[in-house]
Image 1: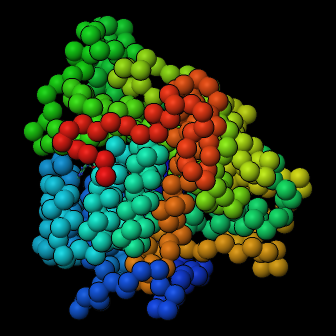
Image 2: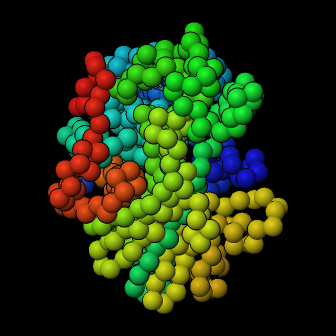
Length: 482
Ligand SMILES: NC(=O)c1ccc[n+]([C@@H]2O[C@H](COP(=O)([O-])OP(=O)(O)OC[C@H]3O[C@@H](n4cnc5c(N)ncnc54)[C@H](O)[C@@H]3O)[C@@H](O)[C@H]2O)c1
């Protein structure tokens, strides 16, 4: 992906780009007090929504920049457990507003206790989602929270309960819903243009991606031991002893590991690369399920639905390896209405993105890429389908739109609008919960090596007490699940 494309993929727009697109396609919920989902938020004299941001790593800054571009939103506080990241947050936020007003916090509970904050943006590793989101909801803060909703299905359920109980607005970072070509693809499917859907193919990345670019430095130190892959570094070996170091002074590692099992500090498992260790993340499957399965469900009209049978096969490093998450996987899921979904990473027959196949045609959608490589026009656009007419235009032709899906042309704008209107966002908490469930159940099937049967109504695994244990996890004291 070139720089421009990756900036767009991360959801970063500058104010001018935003204004250009905002007028064109935005159909946002209007402020209709009579239909509000919850009590109206107190209007501040500034007429702005005050936002606190928690987590300033890869995604936190991208989300925050988009929030700062909105004139009716003011980012007033930042929190991170890493002093360097927090300093960077303050520099960026104060630099944008040209003031020194940003409050800083080490402990998210103190930020959430502040009455000056209406809403929060949370972009911390998955093992922290439940504790921070439920506390934010208890404190009546509206939440822009990241995908996947949480580390386990039980934690996701806790977040859903807390959001409902406290009547707060939730937006998930599944921002593909706010891009026109994903919207168009989902509308084609929902409008019945490809007939009855029989199969959905969802292609996700495989392996481990060294987002933090910290692997080469360790691999160089491991060269004499002939180790060229961090998935081959095991506890109790000389390589492991080389990998373990004291945590850096700027990071509160004890708190960073939080409710997860305490492990020695290894740089290559923390910043950005926590995804490749099941103690803190869920590998590629859980990292991406909240994007491409989220879109698959949108097209199917299954935002509150789920699979009934899930059967997967995958390849794993040793369970205690430095990077231990699944490297190649294929999961088959049976859905209502005789729909089969294939969820795969590292299988060439399943293209990255979401492809719905129906009795009368097909549609494929993915992130666009502006690179000048050998990709076809359709691959660069991230959109292809069986009928050339549907390729024309940013939006589906009006006469074909039998079903009109919720429209948002800016994910953060949609959040702030809903904070004000008290209407549901384009990616509310129940949707995030159901979008991630196939990933969690897929992983449970991969780990147990057997077919899982799921009851979507009661949200339970049927007839498999061992597999059911994997729906939740133990918390390290003093942390307790809510
Ligand atoms: N929507 C998207 O496109 C997208 C893209 C990337 C990441 N994400 C999601 O964003 C979340 C964060 O991922 P990332 O890649 O930015 O991780 P990261 O490791 O780059 O950054 C996380 C930051 O949170 C801080 N942190 C950790 N625990 C904390 C706590 N208890 N209190 C305060 N700060 C804490 C860390 O110090 C770090 O600065 C994940 O859930 C990830 O899935 C979403």
